[in-house]
Image (cartoon, rainbow, N blue to C red):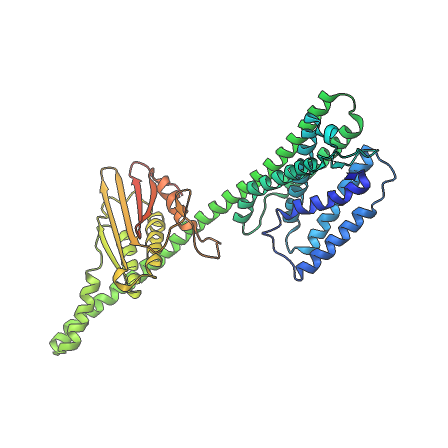
Length: 444
């Protein structure tokens, strides 16, 4: 068994390192990380073993544990190539989880009094050893289960958000610093409880419960910081895509205008060729010009530009874009919003069909207005299973900076116009439906 602080401080260091490691998985490591980590682990365990305990009271023991925690933070700076704020976040989260697991095990022991029956596997503040019974293994199992459940629960709570913060801007340092002060205060209060609350079981349980609530509050604060960071990243991504829509539309319009000028010049040139009886060259030129003339005329200049650009892009990759669109009545949609909607949608469809055979590279596009509503439908073949998260496809691109925000920006724009976006995928077909309401004007 582990009896007294001299033995427990080693176990505490192991628990603290494991608790911090739960949150360090996604951080950027320095060169020779394994060597650095092993050296730091050995040094921290040695310091924990040699840390003197001249006094056993609430204040010095608090100083002991908080000092060991600060040393682990220095070790993280040595091992990871991250800003101090990121490392402080993970260190505070790790210490909070370790302390919470300790409190859960302790309050369970206080309520059930199982250590009085079987003996306790861990007695950090005991003066004398308590003999273990034949059921000592049960004490070890309960102790291990308490720590495993708390560690796993914290990992399950925060890991997805830590992974989503791929740029690792893990919240405001002020909130993380406040969380660090809270866990330090909770550790000190717990020591006061251990050393000065004796003989009053009700008071002991209330103080333990208070300590647990403080730890839960700290984890909630850290989780909220990650959620806010994720929302800010999503908003920045949506704004980026919409701003790109403005620029891309301007470039597309210039390109289409230039093509129209060339088209009229070539029409004039074809008449001259006809007079000079260039039969074969004239036939080929007229065929090309007729193909361009038959591209798209929808009644909306903006929609014409978008569909013309995308039709020409589709032809370059041997893809057929089949359009059935009535663009009259689209004046209520801002130009860059319409490009963000349709440009992203058609680009996604083009990317999806690239892996298909040429005969299967067909994208269907339809747009029509019924009363106050505009309905947009895009359909294309797709390979494999489309993974959805919150109703939207998850990006398959490895570099996620601003990737995956195209569909989110489309959904945001649709909702600005009092409509919505829905996705259906099955039987090798991907369908995207967008509804816009003309009774509302989209904001920036």
